Image (cartoon, rainbow, N blue to C red; front, side, top):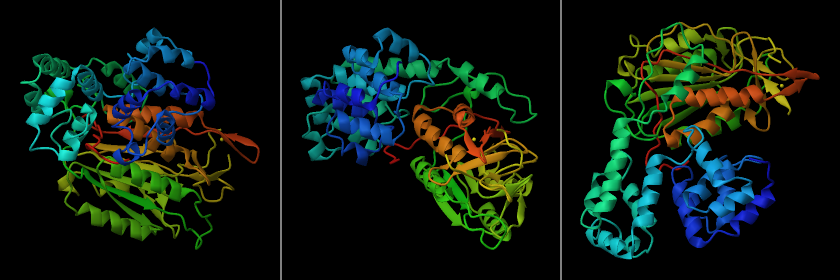
Length: 472
């Protein structure tokens, strides 16, 4: 798509009617929170919220094209320098499409529900939904309220079929066709498998390709095994955020609070109970990890560590080393039985050495560098573990004082964009690798680059399912 400026994009919104905006808002329901949706009154407001959610960016407005295509506004695609066929072809790539198949199903149903059908639905739902909702004229309001009351979700379509059965057999058949397609699996795993081959995650032999269901639906059968993520909350997300190193020779980590806030926001949205610990010493880190080792865990455990680092370790605010092999061992199957066979996920923003990979004003996580920080890793792997490192072995990682670190900001961005469509963590981390690899900055006039490195011994597909009506 040819480059466009923001002014031209806003001009497009002037051609959108009230019903168009309502339809686009509904298609974005998994991507923009309910509270923020309520503030949107026109197309311009929608574009602003899409920008805040990093769904559209300067020079990349394809998501707007996706929405226009789905609501049938093909003529407006020309103002984005696109044709209907070009958009249709691009959306065949599941990693490009942001609107989930489930959300598209509901929209297609809404297009076929006439006034009489809607009246019949309201009659059946009379004792189940608020009177104020039933008085509204939009089927979108009905679907939204049903989702809020957990009467409707991608894995819970039976009640909607029961409501529609006396209203329209055609609509029921449409839902059943969709369910059969999910059961048959969407044959898109080749993309994910190619992503896996690009990651040197472990010496463990990879499983053969597995079939994948719909973008948000749960999987069935051994051929599409996925970690269970059905509890609410899914589990703990522990953030150790070290800024203050004034009692050491290390510099304070300006910008780390931006990373911590971004992680807190995204993992709360994903349904985790987030706990944050600031400025923790080496001994304090061991104490906190031991505390969480003994807690009752549900679906998953996530630990994010933002600190200075050296080879094979992260540093406490007193400069003491905490070796990553010790850090992750608190949660292996032997030491933490309640997490046995469950995913343990670690994201570590720290350097692994002092070597430049060849990068804004940046800070570094490496002791003794003028503006950089570094972390390190040499870790044995147990089952069901993933470690996302900000950089590869022996190299520096970078952090902007104003915007946070390249790695954590890219991670949060792609979790927000990709989790609603059901992408697994391998695909998401490949996108993170791509984003960070394109970043660059300068230290003492020297070009700096960075390459993250995810490593894992996961035995199933890990998908962070977004709880219905979760607020990002």
